[in-house]
Length: 167
Image (tube, rainbow, N blue to C red):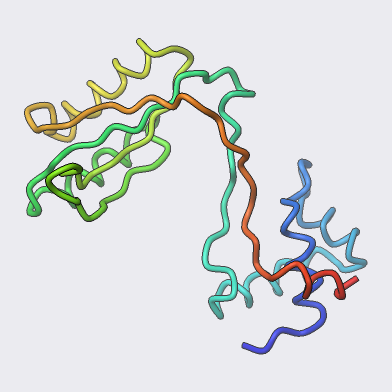
């Protein structure tokens, strides 16, 4: 897909994130001088064409009072990974669950899930519950608690030098 000037303007506007409002697409449109319907249709085209491959929310857990964040990992037999992953992802307290290629011998784990809680004990309890439901409690695994917060930012769609000429 060849990007139009309007596409470039929309991508530049999205790099700062959507406005925090009840009508974020309408507000984004106001910044661009577009109706909400045009913002939504251009976004749909950019997603359908693959220019935008992911569109989601970045939740700043710490600001919401969730100070204990952990990635739980397990070494799961290949024939069980898909079912266990779906079960983990279905838990309301699991923010993401995914499969990765293990790197033995130092890193044998292939199934991951992220859990956020108000304190470490809460998170450990939730992970134990998730492991039981997904039939993982008997498998090798570990819990990795976050020790440092990094800046979270949205997607970067285009090089800054291209965006600077878009306004």
